[in-house]
Figure (cartoon, helix red, strand yellow):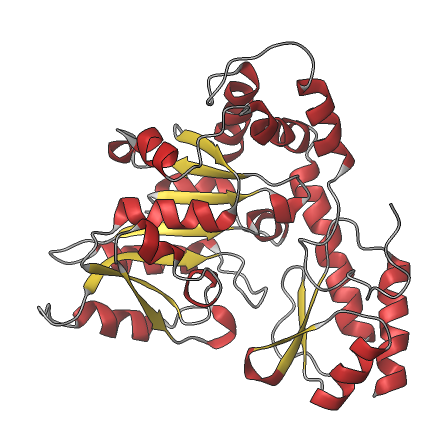
Length: 343
């Protein structure tokens, strides 16, 4: 089915707007033959989990769920008690865009937003939050959530991630750590070493599938084996233990065994760099993965969208453009010409 002729182009609205990569679709077709066990016990899920363990070089448990919001919320509920709070960047997805899902799944857990340039948590701000005394009148930190790549497309390198997790785990009351890797493929393509995660201090890792070019699927990687007990029951209660589990796990087989998980993300990053270099507006944040944030006036943004594009305004008066595995040179050149016309 072709788009409605008057529908705005969604090329750069989000990396969610692209279709599924051929490697993921072929794996789904391959998984559609014959019968298979249900609820994660099928041989496709076993194979996909093995490939993730191989990618991470980690002895970890792996579960597959339908969405990043569900994955994040389930993980945070497992790490944080209802009267505690999760520390995260103030613009993290769990803070701004998940409609209270962490609190809902976590029976009331709080969220404490921390500042930091370009989406990265300021280490001094984290230290100050960790130094706050406990009180009966507000939730004290119970977990730390880190996003890589960040909501601004910037990268924590392995050393920076290690400093944050070390700070969270220091002192008499160590915090558990959740890593939102909705764009983990983009982080890996930008140089982040996924094999170092197992020793980084991260307890639960959400490894993104949908934004990497798969159909809706995310992997929850459980590094802390103490969290495994009854985790499946938590997923079942949350509606995240799918019966036809092979259709959540199979795309991972296609993307990981071919290397497409990282190579497609590397392409998206190259398209973002090209877009930033050609755009007639200044980039507001470093272009380190597949995201470009431009300092575009409200009038220019309105005219650009009126010319048939779909580009979202973002924090700080910027406009966000996301590249994906499917972004073409011609797409970049087309929106650059449109931006020049409205400048």
